[in-house]
Image 1 (cartoon, helix red, strand yellow):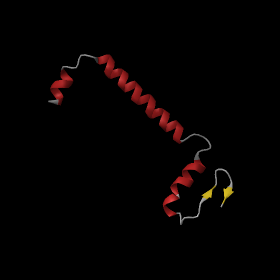
Image 2 (tube, one colour):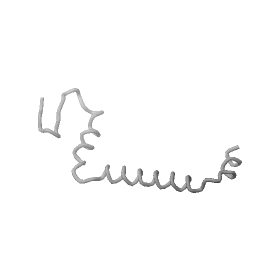
Image 3 (cartoon, helix red, strand yellow):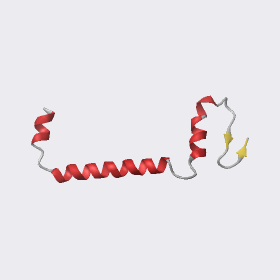
Image 4 (cartoon, one colour):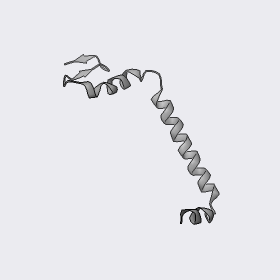
Length: 64
């Protein structure tokens, strides 16, 4: 069924557009993840499962 639908799909421009949108979004996410200054945020998020319940905000410097 799927191969029949794809073989009769005549809008190749739409397929290329969808691929370009996906690729652009993927590259944006990669650059956003590895941008400068985000290491602290991801270290904090990575240590959340091991948190004992003490609220600590290293991003603003406030410790409660």
